[in-house]
Length: 382
Image 1: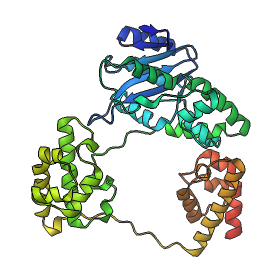
Image 2: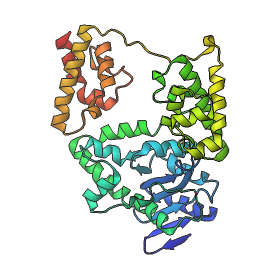
Image 3: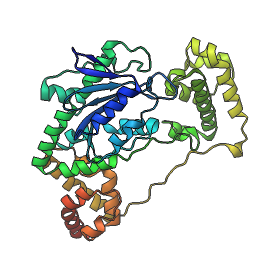
Image 4: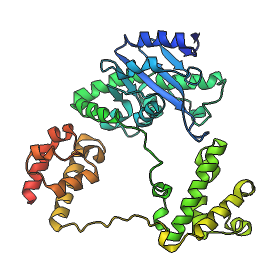
C-alpha cells in the first residue's frame, strides 16, 4: 500500500492491502465512492478503478490488478455504513455487473442537490460553489484500462471522491432543515436497486433511435447492420460507436447500397471503414434485401388511447398544482411529479390517500407530503 503525500491518497494493488482496507472500512459510519470505467474504449466495458474516501483518507483500488474484490462486498452491503455517490445510477449498475455488489444505505449527492433546487448539480459545479474547488476534467474521457496509469490520471480519480463525505453531510443538514431528507432517502433506496439492462433480448433495432421511421424492409437492413456492427466490435474489442456511428448505420439502412460504389456514394462511412468492412456491410444489406416480405420485421407501435375530457382536465389541474408547488419549493417540477405519474393519477383517480398509495409509481414521500392536496384536486374536478 503506497502513499503519495502530495495528493494524500493510498493506492491499493494487492490482496493483503485490500483486506486491510476492508477491515478499516468496516469501522466507518460513512464512505464516499466513485469509479472509472473504459466504456469508450472496449466492447465490453468494465470498472477500472474504484475510489473510496473516508473522513480520514482516500484510497484508489485497482480491480484490474486485484481480480477478486469480494472482501469489499460486506462493506457495500452493510446498512450501518452509508455509501455516498454523486450520480449513482451508472456506478450502482457497474458495481453489480462486475462484482455483484449490493449497496445498502446509499446517499446520492447529485440527487440531493436537485431536491435542494440547485441550478447545476454536476460535481464540478457543486464543489466550485461549495468549496471553491475546480475538478480537472482533462482525463474524464481517457482509457482507464491502460496500465500503468499515469500518476496524473490517478490524481484526477482521487480528487473526484475526496469531497463526497463532507458534501453529503452538509447537504443532509440542508435537506433536514427543509423537511426533505426522507424524500431523498427513499429515492436513494430505490436507486440502490437498479441493475444493468439486458441488451440481448429481442431485435437490436428496438433500442435504436430512428428505427421507427423505417419501412419493414429498412428495418430488416438495419437489424442486419446492427448485428454486423456488434460482431465486428466484439472481434476488435471496440465500443460500437467506434465501428460505425448510429447516423451512419441509419443512412445505410435508408439507402440500402448493394455495391461498394453505391456505399461510397452514401458518404456514410469513411475510406478506412469501407476498406475494413465495406464488403461485410454490402453482404448484410443484400441478406436483408433477400428476406421474404412475410418475414420482414415490423416496428411495434402503441396506439395512444383516446383521453376522455375529464381525464385531460385532471391532468391540467394536477400540472398547474405541481408547477405552483415547485415554484414555491424552488425545485424542478418533475421532482415533485413527472408527467407520466400525473397521467397515471388522472386516469386512476384515487379517492383517498390510501388508494393513492396503490399507484405503484408513487413513492411514500409523495403520498405523505402531497397526498391530501392531490385528492382534494381530484374531488373538485370529479
